[in-house]
Image (cartoon, rainbow over all chains, first blue to last red; front, side, top):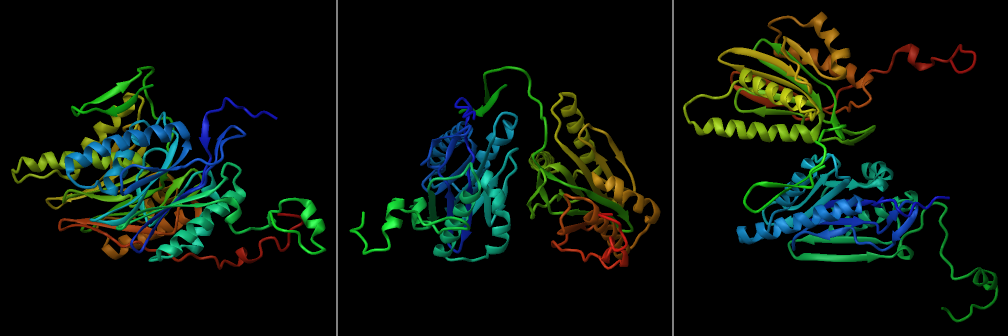
Length: 233
Length: 245
């Protein structure tokens, strides 16, 4: 079995961005793979661009890192010149500029999400090639293939913050269940007028899906479960 | 290979020169555009799909846009390149307006500009991966033309891109005539779009029809067409079959 440890680091990934009544929720898995080996099982794929705009990264880890680094740099200068926070649309267009003009070399799909005082919560999808699509919700990465049907059914307009985050966590968790290139923990970032909140959902805190079993410490615990339970842990 | 990055003085800097760039393949694509001249101007129809390979990924992409007061541009092919073309045209119309001389760019001028852009990109082996349909009305005269990604450019009474060439144009050749009313024109386009919906895998059932007349541009709201499945031979095609067919 060839692990191909020299393969470029790729974030197979599942990334999601969802608008709700008042802001946006961004979500992602945490697996970075080199070939078949999991190089990082706890990556953070939701990267800050400004105080109010974040980006979910998928595809080549290197490409997505360098693009978001450049855009963070440009946005920083833009904010100084503008004298107020950058808008989500400007961030998305800067990403588009790099993605489109270097389309032959880059292999990264991005979801830009944030909140500004003019438009409120907004999500922009920027797939391979550099198309920009403003959407009420966006999905990306290899794991997203398994979520098109799910979102077609489960998505609705004007969700609350709690409903939106639950939807995102459920969706990433479902994708992790079926996509070998996605895994680890579910990270979410909620952005609204009040600020930014980061959340962390480890694998064992997630709902179990089809043919998944409740995790145990050991077989021995199962075998001994007939009698009175020993002290936990 | 060159990585292009803007620097502080407004220029772009190229890092690490190597062999020249070329676009190899499209990623997010739009399918057919169908357009016809009618009594008052031009009608143009397209669906709202953006495909990502075989996945019908985006279902709300507007592929027909107004350009100035007198023209309508529809595009099939790579959506990011269409978005770039719209930026070029924004710049063109802005510069034209700055003359403030009462003149405005008509469809013939826009079509010519696009032809030059597409052909010159083709010559550099770095095409904009689109087939464009340009329709418009200026000073009472209707105009309808097309430019392909290799710079082939022509005008006609009815045009179609992609699958539309094969499925819609035969219908239009038979049923189009001069001075169609708005209602007949829309019905004709819908007939073409329905066939495309049946037979083009990348078509989706959500379309817009745009109209341009001397008065200006109107793009309809998105809507869906009814489809027909009640042919008797559809009900039980394998009834008398031996085996699978």
